[in-house]
Length: 346
Image (tube, rainbow, N blue to C red; front, side, top):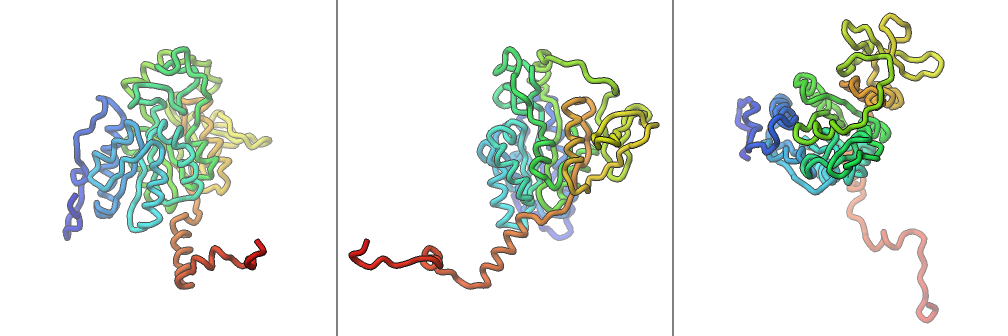
C-alpha cells in the first residue's frame, strides 16, 4: 500500500479496493465490504491510518479486500489485538470485523471486556447466525431447534442476543442494521466512527449457502399476537417508535410496570426513542424484541452515551507516571512494608 497523502487527492471507494473476494454468490459480506469501501474515503483519514483487525471465519476475510493496514488474527482474539493497537497508536482508526461465531464463542470474553472497558474500537459484527467457513454448524447465535451438521436433531442451545449481551456489558454505543439496506448500514457505521469509545454495530445478514438450509429444519413456535406486521422497527432519536403499514403500530410503555409492549399508534404511552438514556435498561428492552418477534428486530442506534474511553485514560495515566521520572524496579519490588532477616536467623 502506498501513501494516500498526495496533495489534493480525493480518495474514492476504488482506493480502498483490493483483491477478489472469495465469498459465495449472494453472501451479505459482499454488500458490507462494498459499504465499508464507500464509507472510509468519506472520513477524511489517509488510508495508512486505518487498521482493520479480524479473527477467523468468512467475515474475517474482509481485511484482505480493503486497501488499508490489516491483521487477519487468531480465532476470537481480534478485540485484544485491536486494543493493543488502539491504546498505543491513538492516531489510527482501528476497526474490528468479526462474525457471530468468532465473537460470541471463543471470542466472547474478549468482546465483552473490550466493550466494558470502552476501548476506542469500531466493532462490526456480521451476524448470519451460523458457522459458514466450517460448513454450517450452529453458532452461539443460532436459534434453538435449528438443524445443522452439528445438530442433526435440532440445536438445544439457548442462543445469544448479541445486542443484549453488549448492553449487559454496558456498551456506550450499540447499533443494529441489515446488509440489504445500504443507506442505513452506512449511517450506522458512520455513527459508530463518530463515537469516542467502543462502538458495536451488529449487521444481520443471511448465509445463502447454509442458513437457508438450516431454516428448513427450524422448529417454529407460533408468534405472539398482536402484532403481525413484518419488517424491522426503525429507531430514530427523539422520534416516536412506530412501525407497520402506515405506522399503525407502536411501541408503548406500560404505565404500571414500565415494561415495553406493542399497541396501536392511537393509544397513549408511545415511547419516544432516547439513545442517550444513561441506563442500559431501556435499550436492553428494545434488544429483547428480537427474541420474541425476530421479524420486528429493531434497527438503528440503540444506545449512544458518553464515558471516558479506555484509550484516553491509559494515555493520561502514562503521562502522569512519566512526570515522576524513571522508576526503580528493586524499590518497587521491596515496597514500603519490608524487613531484613539477619544472617543466621533464617
